[in-house]
Length: 139
Image 1 (cartoon, helix red, strand yellow):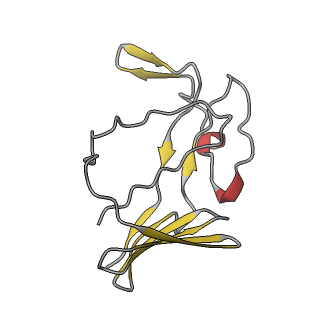
Image 2 (tube, rainbow, N blue to C red):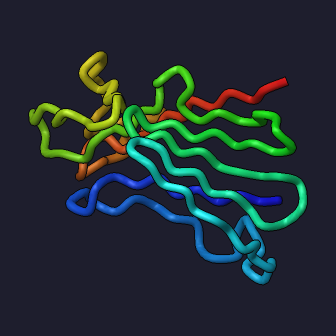
Image 3 (cartoon, rainbow, N blue to C red):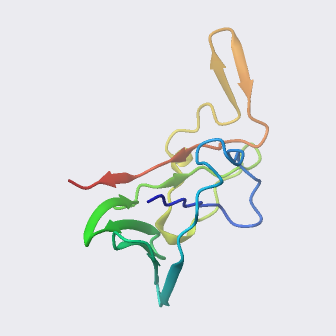
């Protein structure tokens, strides 16, 4: 099966690049029927197809676990290192991020608005925009 998970900053954040439809995953794949089970701090999405697949979303701190056949396959943000750099104006400090997400720009501020590549300098008018993933693949 295929799970497509989109993690986005809040509605007030500047939009980030998104892959065009059909660029990576074929759009004409038949979608499974799913069952949602929501409780305080946890959402579980169970696929109706064979394989006993489910996606567990823990809300705070944000984590996503992909299960199949009763076995954990992948764990997103298991070590709580998921990092979204926040767009902002030069000199502004990053706002506090919810759910244990990090903004590592407070550690090293060099290259946040301009980044040199040889003789070329890449301008970043909205400031930092990197996304760092924390993915654990289980054995």
